[in-house]
Length: 197
Image 1: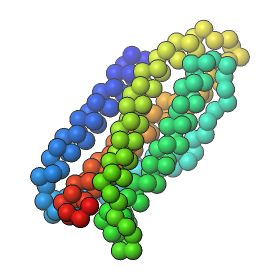
Image 2 (image 1 turned 135 degrees about the vertical axis):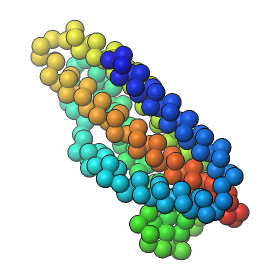
Image 3 (image 1 turned 45 degrees about the vertical axis):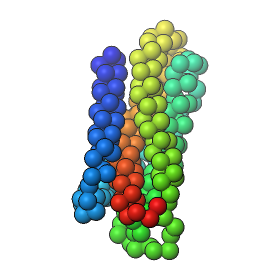
């Protein structure tokens, strides 16, 4: 369990470092560089891995309570994280369309109103907060697993299912949130480079 916690923390830290690094250099990128980066991000958003994650998102559902408070709380928070990530997955392509003037699939739409930097910034802060929440939740998995050891035989099957649900959610949402954050930073840089925000 300690190893799993270390992996999650390392992944979160690397993700934040990557995103922050991109944000620092985003202001110096040309419009062509931003467009090339967007093409890479669009490819990543439509990749097999991203599509598989979305299918898995839809299959996950909150397990029944197990009677072990730490496991149940983790499952409840994981459900909230899952719902929040699904909402963000809807918002980011919409912001992409509003900023770029076309959908991720390349369908042009010039009738939309460009988002403000404040809107993009607020969404970025929401995503960054979610990434931090994933890190915090991953740290509680070890203690929830320890609580499972002292559970009654009747509680163990439900608690194990709940714990596995939480692990699955955390493993799915982190790469999705990191991708959404990269897309958002590109959109912010694109909006800034256009000069009409």
